[in-house]
Amino acid sequence: MTDDNQRRRPKASVRAIGNRRLQPNTLMMGHGFDPALSEGSLKPPIFLTSTFVFENAAAGKRHFEGVTGKRPGGAEGLVYSRFNGPNQEIAEDRLGVWEDAKDALTFSSGMSAIATVLLAFVQPGDVIVHSAPLYAATETLIGRILGKFGVKWLDFPAGATPEEIDAVVEKAQALGRVSLIYLESPANPTNVLVDVEAVANVRDTRFGTGEDRPPIVIDNTFLGPLWHKPLAHGADIVVYSLTKYAGGHSDLVAGGALGSKAHINTIRSMRNTIGTILDPNSAWMLLRSLETLELRMSRAGENAAKICAWLKDQPKVEKIVYLGFPENERQADIYRRHCTGAGSTFSLYLKGGEREAFAFLDALKIAKLAVSLGGTETLASCPAAMTHLSVPDDRKAALGITPNMVRISIGVEDADDLIADFEQALRAV
Ligand SMILES: Cc1ncc(COP(=O)(O)O)c(C=O)c1O
Image 1 (cartoon, rainbow, N blue to C red):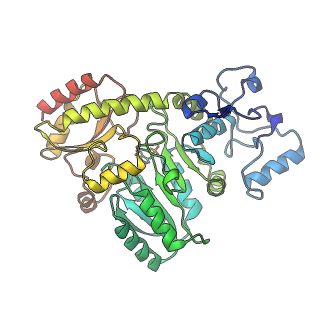
Image 2: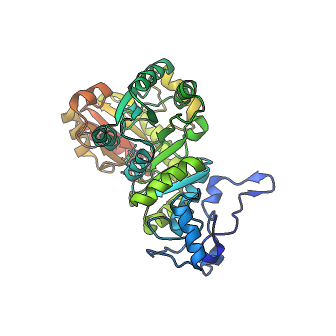
């Protein structure tokens, strides 16, 4: 816990009034920060410092015991900005609130969060079981980079049944120590949901509660933290590209990891060593973003529902993969059990191929032709030719990442203006 001498954190944040537990929206305005510790400043100052002055040598030793893992739970006080900092810690406290996580960490990007988690749990010779597809850089990290260190992987399709998931985990156990089950739901860019509850059942049945039980890690970038809270469905660690909905203004790059104290301690030790923590300025911007998270995501979600209802009947559209219109009963069932909203990112398949997708993208006037998602503005891109270009062609085809797929992330603009934009762009196809 906090060392009061270091003037950074409140003694306790108000989490409830009487019997009423305060909601995340309310807590985003003040949780984890006491203005009295910073000259009455309403907003936390940005702490631009590389190191922190210890009150005495014994305190310095105690803090380093936390940093080095001699004592679990991280440093009790502020030490050095590769390990911790006030802006990062306030952002971490607030991020954890959305999913009722016991602990949270911020990182310099979504990929640095994912890389740090993988390095923290995986050893040479281990096997990673993952859902497919994954964000292309995550696939590269697991397959090509960890592969160089003898790490093997086996995957199952995102929408797999419990039996299919079990068969893959059984095969993986025969290959070596399964050290991690890694999920992405919905998958980028196909928007197919993973049955997290089924994965947790398979893991629990096969590994029990023993030491060798692999943690279930899930990338919750597309729906979290508002519409999907995987810790409540059996996942152990949630990772994020906070660059997307959490950051929400397309003006910062950041990552996050949430979970139990024990799992986060393991990840924190790796972050301390390799220095993948978020910088104070971006952490401050993230605090700004978290204040409006629910407003932004709700508006974007409402817009997407209206726009998808219009798009799906357009003659030049082959199909839409949007969680509001589940593709089959299995996806509908996973959606009902896991999600409270369909999000605002979806895949639009145009009749034709790359030519038609490019013609549509080039004609857009409001939506911007850019990769990324979850910002206030609407973005559109062609994953097969852009974010997922590095995925081998046969794997792209098998996973449904076809040249006629356009990924669209709806923002908070006026929905009818966006429909007008898509209507004129479809005419150009
Ligand atoms: C699902 C998902 N995970 C992870 C990442 C990587 O995040 P970052 O770009 O913040 O490193 C992305 C980026 O697009 C993503 O879409």
